[in-house]
Length: 137
Image (tube, rainbow, N blue to C red):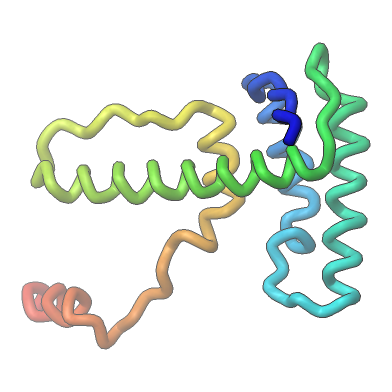
């Protein structure tokens, strides 16, 4: 079995271009449906992302759809994890010094796009919500 050739890492400019394209097609590529029509729409969206990314990424290597999808999935997972860890460490410090963010500009842009998938729905019946009401009265 031949070892696959490793592609170059994604650079900041390349990530920003991809982030802009993801923002444009977000409602398609993050659709939860798995039927035939939706799958074809997702494939077409990724093909368009690939074409536009390869045309607009200055000095970057040519990427295939599989590379872009894999990078996006891993990138999204890494940004979510970093966001959750930073949020938890902020709560741990008890209002002390804020932790240094490990997210760069492109990561923060992606976070703003996927933020609706990360933040939980507010539950008025949650014990934390009830405790807050007790202290207000």
